[in-house]
Length: 296
Image (cartoon, rainbow, N blue to C red; front, side):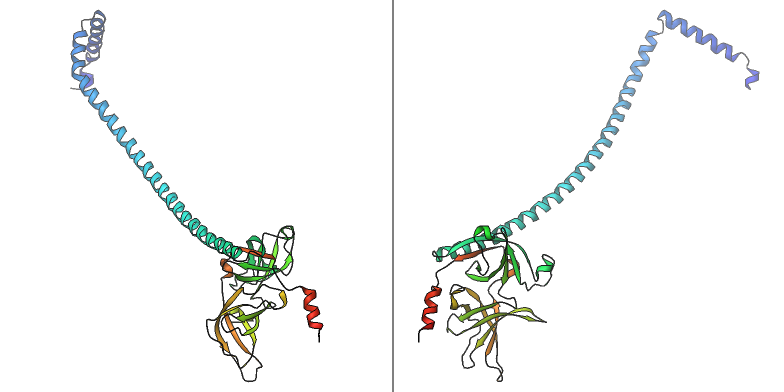
């Protein structure tokens, strides 16, 4: 049967709607509504609870992802802080050892007038401050200058009474230190044990870089490897007994007038952070030396 064969159906639906509206208005359908509510309400609450659970689950998953990302970030930050802490501890230990050594040097030489300084730059030539990659340095710059009493020619010492070099130029706040391995450096020296004398100079080597060499050693002198070389104090330019290095190898050619010894430096200039400048020390009076030399 088609819709055309049931033309009365719309009229019946309209009449039923009118009847239901009338009954609803009189309150006769309220018991039926309440009964239906009792049946439908649990289903509604169940569906609402299910929707809330799904929402909580999705929100919980998002929060877990955020917590995981936060945890990864915190772990990375913790690792960075741990590495930085280790670096600072190592730096503190190294600086503390150097400062303790300098304090020991001061206590061992109470007559010396000293001023301490920190290394602020290092390199091979004044033109390429902070950019040179040659490990054999020739100079340092420290953060004390003429306002602190520093002057050209003054010796500069590191922890362990090791001679670093001498002040080559100075400004009010900074001092340029020529290292003992610079090719223009010359230091009167002697061997600590045998008391053999000579000169310690810097020398350029195309393969090994800047070397520290003891020269002017008489051919008949017997040298021993690893013997310590110190400043002799001749001429009163430098205090006596500052450490220069140890004998590493010996060389002598029959045609040469003197023996030579390559020294192992007593410190690594690249790791040097703190030094002291010897402003004054006991030395023979210059006028007395001149008088003695003039006597027949």
